[in-house]
Image (cartoon, rainbow, N blue to C red):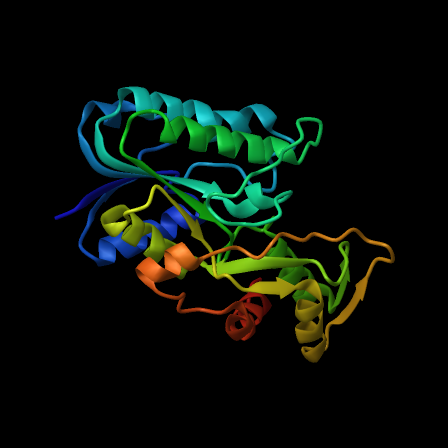
Amino acid sequence: MRRALIIGGSGFIGRHLRRLLESLQWEVTCPARGDLQWMQTPQDIVFYCAGLTADFRKQPFATVEAHVHLLQQILQHAQFERLVYLSSTRVYQKAAVASEDSLLQVISQDASDLYNLSKLMGESLALHSGRPVQIARLSNIYGKGMPPANFLADILQTAVRNKHLVFQTAPFSEKDYLHVDDACRYLMLIAVHGCERMYNVASGEQTSHAMLADWLAAQHVECEFVAGAPAQQFPPIDVSRLHAAFGSPRHRLQDDLTELFSYYSEMP
Protein backbone atom coordinates (compact mmCIF):
# COMPACT_ATOMS: atom_id res chain seq x y z
CA MET A 1 0.00 0.00 0.00
CA ARG A 2 1.32 3.43 -0.96
CA ARG A 3 1.27 6.14 1.68
CA ALA A 4 0.85 9.85 1.06
CA LEU A 5 0.82 12.91 3.26
CA ILE A 6 -0.93 16.01 1.95
CA ILE A 7 0.06 19.44 3.26
CA GLY A 8 -2.98 21.62 2.65
CA GLY A 9 -5.34 18.67 2.56
CA SER A 10 -8.35 20.80 3.49
CA GLY A 11 -8.00 22.99 0.40
CA PHE A 12 -9.75 22.55 -2.94
CA ILE A 13 -6.99 20.55 -4.61
CA GLY A 14 -5.99 18.77 -1.40
CA ARG A 15 -9.53 17.43 -0.82
CA HIS A 16 -9.83 16.09 -4.34
CA LEU A 17 -6.34 14.61 -4.27
CA ARG A 18 -7.14 12.78 -1.04
CA ARG A 19 -10.36 11.41 -2.55
CA LEU A 20 -8.50 10.13 -5.62
CA LEU A 21 -5.68 8.51 -3.67
CA GLU A 22 -8.03 6.82 -1.21
CA SER A 23 -10.10 5.46 -4.10
CA LEU A 24 -6.86 3.82 -5.28
CA GLN A 25 -6.32 2.28 -1.83
CA TRP A 26 -3.59 4.66 -0.75
CA GLU A 27 -3.16 5.40 2.94
CA VAL A 28 -3.53 9.19 3.18
CA THR A 29 -2.72 11.55 6.05
CA CYS A 30 -3.71 15.23 6.10
CA PRO A 31 -2.20 16.94 9.16
CA ALA A 32 -3.92 20.01 10.57
CA ARG A 33 -2.39 23.40 9.97
CA GLY A 34 0.50 23.93 12.36
CA ASP A 35 0.83 20.23 13.16
CA LEU A 36 4.44 19.22 12.49
CA GLN A 37 4.50 16.08 14.64
CA TRP A 38 4.23 13.99 11.48
CA MET A 39 7.81 14.96 10.55
CA GLN A 40 9.05 12.54 13.19
CA THR A 41 7.72 9.63 11.11
CA PRO A 42 9.21 8.61 7.73
CA GLN A 43 6.83 9.29 4.83
CA ASP A 44 6.54 7.83 1.35
CA ILE A 45 5.21 10.73 -0.75
CA VAL A 46 4.49 14.27 0.46
CA PHE A 47 2.23 16.47 -1.67
CA TYR A 48 2.83 20.11 -0.76
CA CYS A 49 -0.53 21.73 -1.61
CA ALA A 50 -0.39 24.60 0.90
CA GLY A 51 -0.68 28.09 -0.51
CA LEU A 52 -2.64 31.30 -0.92
CA THR A 53 -4.33 32.38 -4.13
CA ALA A 54 -6.65 35.35 -4.61
CA ASP A 55 -6.02 36.90 -1.17
CA PHE A 56 -2.22 36.92 -1.34
CA ARG A 57 -2.05 40.71 -1.78
CA LYS A 58 -3.78 41.22 1.57
CA GLN A 59 -1.67 38.59 3.33
CA PRO A 60 1.94 38.96 2.16
CA PHE A 61 3.48 37.39 5.28
CA ALA A 62 1.11 34.42 5.22
CA THR A 63 1.90 33.97 1.51
CA VAL A 64 5.63 33.64 2.15
CA GLU A 65 4.98 31.44 5.18
CA ALA A 66 2.88 29.04 3.10
CA HIS A 67 5.01 29.01 -0.05
CA VAL A 68 8.50 29.08 1.47
CA HIS A 69 8.92 28.94 5.24
CA LEU A 70 6.87 25.82 5.98
CA LEU A 71 8.47 24.14 2.98
CA GLN A 72 11.91 25.00 4.35
CA GLN A 73 11.13 23.23 7.64
CA ILE A 74 9.93 20.13 5.84
CA LEU A 75 12.94 19.99 3.53
CA GLN A 76 15.30 20.37 6.48
CA HIS A 77 13.70 18.03 8.99
CA ALA A 78 11.20 15.59 7.43
CA GLN A 79 11.99 12.14 6.08
CA PHE A 80 10.31 11.24 2.79
CA GLU A 81 10.94 9.33 -0.42
CA ARG A 82 9.57 12.09 -2.65
CA LEU A 83 7.98 15.52 -2.29
CA VAL A 84 5.79 17.13 -4.96
CA TYR A 85 5.64 20.92 -4.60
CA LEU A 86 2.62 22.61 -6.16
CA SER A 87 3.63 25.81 -7.88
CA SER A 88 1.72 27.82 -10.48
CA THR A 89 1.81 28.69 -14.18
CA ARG A 90 1.20 32.24 -12.99
CA VAL A 91 5.00 32.53 -12.88
CA TYR A 92 4.86 32.83 -16.71
CA GLN A 93 2.94 36.11 -16.43
CA LYS A 94 5.74 38.20 -17.94
CA ALA A 95 7.46 35.43 -19.91
CA ALA A 96 7.60 35.17 -23.68
CA VAL A 97 7.26 31.37 -23.63
CA ALA A 98 5.60 29.18 -21.00
CA SER A 99 7.76 26.06 -20.94
CA GLU A 100 9.40 24.53 -17.90
CA ASP A 101 12.83 25.92 -18.87
CA SER A 102 11.69 29.42 -19.86
CA LEU A 103 13.48 32.52 -18.62
CA LEU A 104 11.10 34.23 -16.18
CA GLN A 105 10.72 37.89 -15.27
CA VAL A 106 9.42 39.43 -12.05
CA ILE A 107 9.34 42.98 -10.71
CA SER A 108 9.55 43.39 -6.95
CA GLN A 109 7.67 46.71 -7.09
CA ASP A 110 4.69 44.96 -8.72
CA ALA A 111 2.36 43.80 -5.93
CA SER A 112 1.05 40.94 -8.05
CA ASP A 113 4.58 39.54 -8.36
CA LEU A 114 4.79 38.79 -4.64
CA TYR A 115 2.94 35.57 -5.43
CA ASN A 116 5.27 34.68 -8.29
CA LEU A 117 8.40 35.49 -6.31
CA SER A 118 7.31 33.37 -3.36
CA LYS A 119 6.42 30.42 -5.58
CA LEU A 120 9.73 30.68 -7.42
CA MET A 121 11.59 30.88 -4.13
CA GLY A 122 9.79 27.70 -3.03
CA GLU A 123 10.68 26.01 -6.30
CA SER A 124 14.33 27.02 -6.12
CA LEU A 125 14.66 26.01 -2.48
CA ALA A 126 13.15 22.61 -3.20
CA LEU A 127 15.23 21.98 -6.32
CA HIS A 128 18.52 22.93 -4.64
CA SER A 129 17.83 21.32 -1.25
CA GLY A 130 19.46 18.03 -2.20
CA ARG A 131 16.16 16.29 -1.45
CA PRO A 132 14.05 14.14 -3.86
CA VAL A 133 11.53 16.72 -5.06
CA GLN A 134 9.45 17.51 -8.12
CA ILE A 135 7.71 20.73 -9.11
CA ALA A 136 4.20 20.84 -10.57
CA ARG A 137 3.24 24.22 -12.03
CA LEU A 138 -0.55 24.19 -12.07
CA SER A 139 -2.74 26.37 -14.28
CA ASN A 140 -6.21 27.63 -13.31
CA ILE A 141 -7.90 24.66 -11.63
CA TYR A 142 -11.68 24.46 -11.81
CA GLY A 143 -14.46 22.16 -10.68
CA LYS A 144 -17.45 22.02 -8.36
CA GLY A 145 -16.65 23.55 -4.99
CA MET A 146 -13.77 25.71 -6.24
CA PRO A 147 -12.99 28.68 -3.97
CA PRO A 148 -15.50 31.58 -4.34
CA ALA A 149 -12.66 34.01 -5.06
CA ASN A 150 -11.67 31.94 -8.10
CA PHE A 151 -12.30 33.99 -11.27
CA LEU A 152 -14.43 31.32 -12.92
CA ALA A 153 -16.44 30.67 -9.75
CA ASP A 154 -16.98 34.40 -9.29
CA ILE A 155 -18.32 35.06 -12.78
CA LEU A 156 -20.55 31.99 -12.77
CA GLN A 157 -22.06 32.85 -9.38
CA THR A 158 -22.61 36.46 -10.44
CA ALA A 159 -24.13 35.39 -13.75
CA VAL A 160 -26.53 32.97 -12.07
CA ARG A 161 -27.52 35.45 -9.36
CA ASN A 162 -27.89 38.65 -11.42
CA LYS A 163 -28.33 37.47 -15.00
CA HIS A 164 -25.93 40.30 -15.73
CA LEU A 165 -22.14 40.29 -15.72
CA VAL A 166 -19.57 43.03 -16.18
CA PHE A 167 -16.08 41.83 -17.09
CA GLN A 168 -13.34 44.05 -15.64
CA THR A 169 -10.82 42.75 -18.20
CA ALA A 170 -10.62 42.95 -21.97
CA PRO A 171 -12.52 40.36 -24.05
CA PHE A 172 -9.31 38.97 -25.53
CA SER A 173 -7.98 38.13 -22.06
CA GLU A 174 -7.45 34.39 -21.83
CA LYS A 175 -6.43 31.67 -19.42
CA ASP A 176 -5.59 27.99 -19.37
CA TYR A 177 -8.14 25.96 -17.34
CA LEU A 178 -7.66 22.41 -16.06
CA HIS A 179 -10.28 20.31 -14.28
CA VAL A 180 -9.39 19.40 -10.70
CA ASP A 181 -9.82 15.67 -11.41
CA ASP A 182 -7.27 15.88 -14.24
CA ALA A 183 -4.92 17.92 -12.04
CA CYS A 184 -5.05 15.35 -9.23
CA ARG A 185 -4.54 12.44 -11.62
CA TYR A 186 -1.47 14.15 -13.06
CA LEU A 187 -0.09 14.88 -9.58
CA MET A 188 -0.43 11.24 -8.61
CA LEU A 189 1.25 10.08 -11.83
CA ILE A 190 4.09 12.59 -11.42
CA ALA A 191 4.71 11.38 -7.88
CA VAL A 192 4.79 7.71 -8.88
CA HIS A 193 6.15 7.70 -12.43
CA GLY A 194 7.52 11.19 -13.15
CA CYS A 195 11.06 11.24 -14.54
CA GLU A 196 11.41 15.03 -14.84
CA ARG A 197 11.96 17.45 -11.97
CA MET A 198 9.36 19.93 -13.24
CA TYR A 199 6.06 19.67 -15.11
CA ASN A 200 3.52 22.19 -16.36
CA VAL A 201 0.19 20.76 -15.20
CA ALA A 202 -2.26 22.43 -17.54
CA SER A 203 -4.64 21.74 -20.41
CA GLY A 204 -2.57 23.52 -23.03
CA GLU A 205 -5.74 25.22 -24.32
CA GLN A 206 -6.47 28.93 -23.88
CA THR A 207 -10.04 30.09 -23.18
CA SER A 208 -10.80 33.74 -23.80
CA HIS A 209 -13.13 35.90 -21.75
CA ALA A 210 -14.98 36.65 -24.98
CA MET A 211 -15.73 32.93 -25.37
CA LEU A 212 -17.02 32.78 -21.78
CA ALA A 213 -19.19 35.85 -22.42
CA ASP A 214 -20.62 34.32 -25.59
CA TRP A 215 -21.46 31.10 -23.77
CA LEU A 216 -23.13 32.97 -20.90
CA ALA A 217 -25.08 35.12 -23.35
CA ALA A 218 -26.52 31.89 -24.78
CA GLN A 219 -27.74 31.16 -21.23
CA HIS A 220 -29.59 34.51 -21.25
CA VAL A 221 -26.97 36.32 -19.16
CA GLU A 222 -26.32 39.89 -20.27
CA CYS A 223 -22.55 40.40 -20.53
CA GLU A 224 -20.52 43.55 -21.05
CA PHE A 225 -16.88 44.56 -20.87
CA VAL A 226 -15.59 47.72 -19.20
CA ALA A 227 -14.32 50.07 -21.90
CA GLY A 228 -10.54 50.17 -22.00
CA ALA A 229 -10.24 47.37 -19.45
CA PRO A 230 -6.77 45.80 -19.18
CA ALA A 231 -6.00 42.49 -20.81
CA GLN A 232 -4.96 39.46 -18.77
CA GLN A 233 -2.91 37.31 -21.10
CA PHE A 234 -0.40 34.55 -20.54
CA PRO A 235 1.59 32.76 -23.21
CA PRO A 236 0.08 29.35 -24.11
CA ILE A 237 1.26 26.80 -21.58
CA ASP A 238 3.63 24.22 -23.04
CA VAL A 239 2.29 20.85 -21.90
CA SER A 240 4.29 18.67 -24.28
CA ARG A 241 6.35 17.17 -21.44
CA LEU A 242 3.26 16.35 -19.36
CA HIS A 243 1.15 14.96 -22.19
CA ALA A 244 4.00 12.88 -23.62
CA ALA A 245 4.41 11.15 -20.27
CA PHE A 246 0.82 10.91 -19.04
CA GLY A 247 -1.58 11.66 -21.89
CA SER A 248 -4.11 14.41 -22.52
CA PRO A 249 -6.64 15.64 -19.94
CA ARG A 250 -10.04 13.98 -19.86
CA HIS A 251 -11.99 17.21 -19.41
CA ARG A 252 -12.39 20.44 -21.39
CA LEU A 253 -13.81 23.58 -19.84
CA GLN A 254 -16.07 24.18 -22.84
CA ASP A 255 -17.65 20.77 -22.26
CA ASP A 256 -18.05 21.30 -18.51
CA LEU A 257 -19.61 24.78 -18.50
CA THR A 258 -23.19 23.48 -18.64
CA GLU A 259 -22.67 21.27 -15.59
CA LEU A 260 -20.90 24.07 -13.70
CA PHE A 261 -23.65 26.57 -14.54
CA SER A 262 -26.27 24.12 -13.26
CA TYR A 263 -24.23 23.55 -10.10
CA TYR A 264 -24.20 27.25 -9.26
CA SER A 265 -27.86 27.62 -10.26
CA GLU A 266 -28.82 25.02 -7.67
CA MET A 267 -26.81 26.60 -4.85
CA PRO A 268 -28.88 28.38 -2.17
